[in-house]
Length: 340
Picture 1: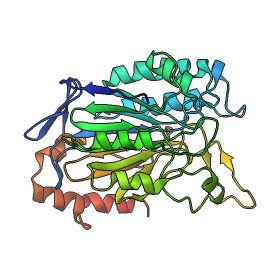
Picture 2: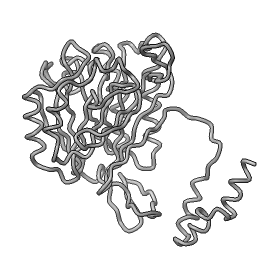
Picture 3: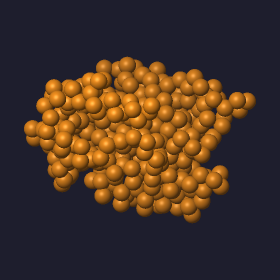
């Protein structure tokens, strides 16, 4: 089994909160606490199913895989709080081609470096272990399960290989479960995120996907119950989905390549070149928040300039309620009038 521990620490990755301000990776972003929650301790970008092809070929001759991923990374770089880690939950390459992995690294690694983000890969059923291991980790090609552990300033992220060589369904070996139990025996400071490709969830809108599900989910549940795993991140489905498994929230990120039309009539499966998205994961002391972020720059129909932040900061708590919460305020009256 391939297993390793990688630790990302230091001021370039760790947010530091002082009073009403959060200092993040070398620049200041003013964040007066407006509600009950302090800023999150960690921000994780959850990206899935890039399905890169060699030579930059378009998937099905239509899908702009590379352009879509560049768009996703640009949107992440635009965030006021860049992610601490980029987690790719599998199907990185569509056919396991060496050039596909090389092209993926060439796009992702510079962006991760600019954001100061740890890069975390996860095996998918379209990936091939020898090429995945050697070309993404610069080691000798391996046929062993690709399981790795990362420490992101106290938040543990486990990349767990649920693939079956030569097949598209998922499964986990006894040796992997024993290894996972050993890792989880010691809790992490901020808990653990388990990143897999095959989600341990039913697929009620895609009957056919049951054939490609993760086998032996009861065995995985027995290992996870009572541990510090706070969330499971997954891919594989090509649409966003959420549920619980062994009492743990599960979040499935839609693909950056193409998604599935879940209401298509008279179709067993219907892939569409639309609705691509990524997820953001915000970790708080007692909460994990998953947010779907659609790809693309759409026209704005309403909004406020950034200089409004200073005005909000200058207000008292009660003044903010009078201006922004009170339905009869001048501010809300203007918003209502805009739709009359």
